[in-house]
Length: 279
Image 1: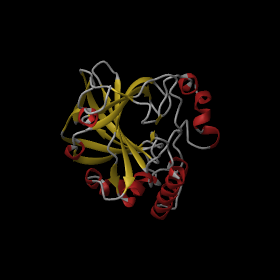
Image 2: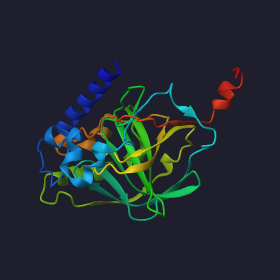
Image 3: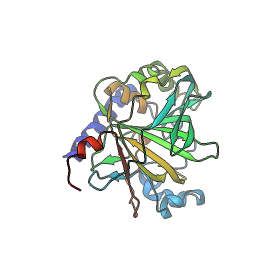
Image 4: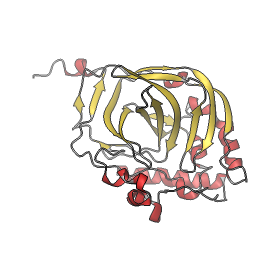
């Protein structure tokens, strides 16, 4: 049932995006895709730099099975210190991204501070929970001073408008207008974009070590998937995929094998929930 629902949502989004744009743009030399001979099952053979996509053993995304996660009280609350900063909206061919020119804030993970550099969106979601796929997934990509990467992922279902996206709605429209012009690929200044609405306390999240979900599929990425599923409107979701060429509007990589990895759980209310349980 979850798969049928997920497919219905994807179909509706693609249909909505089709009304927004009727032209397909060239891929500007993109070296990988999501269908046919450029699809995920072929990524490892498209370039020597992409070999990890095929032979890596800590790949992302994954299906998170809630009956197999391990509660880890040592994780503690997710410390996010975001602010408002100048940003640029970019069509990366395979996704739409918001890049931050100034310091937009940090997240602290296991004592290491990571600075937010960009965020982008995948439709439908790449990570699944108990096999359930969601309408959209937002990846907030952070870097440490040593160059290590930590990604905070937010899952979205369709529903009420997302306040954060309201700030860039007009800029997404500009990006769409540019998408099939000679200027395709040129960044759109988004001005000062506030991240305050994304600082909401994370009472539950999942943590594991994985990879980038696009080539070169670099491993040892620290993933944090927030347990609270947020909402965005159909129009907002469609606007995030409308500038993309049709073959990239469904830009989720299939889930990968865990290969013995452990998915940790932080749940602020776990102790209260289980205090009366026998050991």
